[in-house]
Amino acid sequence: MKVTPTEIDPQEKPPVVTDVSAKEVSEVKDSRYTSLDEELPSRFSFYSFQSLGIRPFTLMELKKLFRAHTSSNFKDIVDVIGATIDRNVYDLTVGDFWFLMYWQRINSYKKSPMTVPWTCEANDHVLAVELDRLLPETLKNTVTVNKTTIRVVDFDIQAVADFTARIREEYGVDLFPGTIRDVVAMVKLADKVEPDDDWIAKYATNISPDHGATIQERMKFLENMSQREDINAIDFIYEIEQFVKIAEHGVRESITSKCKECDAEREVPLTLDAHSFFPSL
Ligand SMILES: [Zn+2]
Image 1 (cartoon, rainbow, N blue to C red):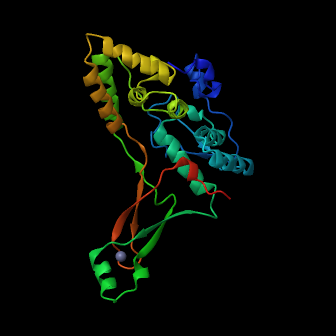
Image 2: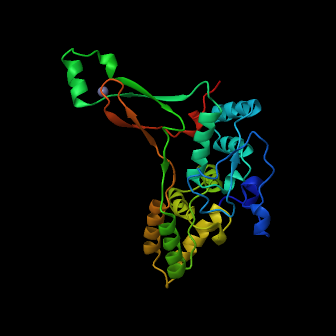
């Protein structure tokens, strides 16, 4: 592998947990913190902790976000989000991380809510405009992203538990959804790896850190697996694909909106670009 462990930021390394009970103790939160215990999309299925508190950004953090926006450095955004929660942001799944991004967008920028424009395409409405019965402007709508419009992708916790148990039994491997630690590592690796490494990295992110703390170690683990005669590595790749599907969670990438003129419903897509996600004040 072309990247040596010394190039990895200590914060991004998985914490060495010697005493699990110590990790479950929540830090003292001040009154600014809101508990997301009931709302986190993963419902804590993949963590050793069962609670998470978050507070809105401070002015200094907005400044850091502005810097991250101009430098297009994803890790800077991750670190700012990390400063606002009482858990290690690098341990979170990608789905949970995006939920926190939306939480901050809604709760830290109350004076400038995120709005998404869309155009009604309902046949009757479009026809009425074509026949000059309604003005073309009536087709234009906007929807505001707020806590009542965003929806979470739900998953079957028991099905995921059963699936991972079967994989553990058949292949001796623990599966785990990709974490933010992996995403940051992959962004860093992106210009250093060959396309085929990139392909294997995608699967390595869904293998438990127990099989290798870094993404590179888990890529090596997968490569070694493909050499084994007792395992069908191609079947295993299909199993990972299946796991990704059933364990998917996070914020839905669209919101439902109704046309203000004709009441027709439309799924309006949300753009998930971390670098332009927060307004630059
Ligand atoms: Zn309409």
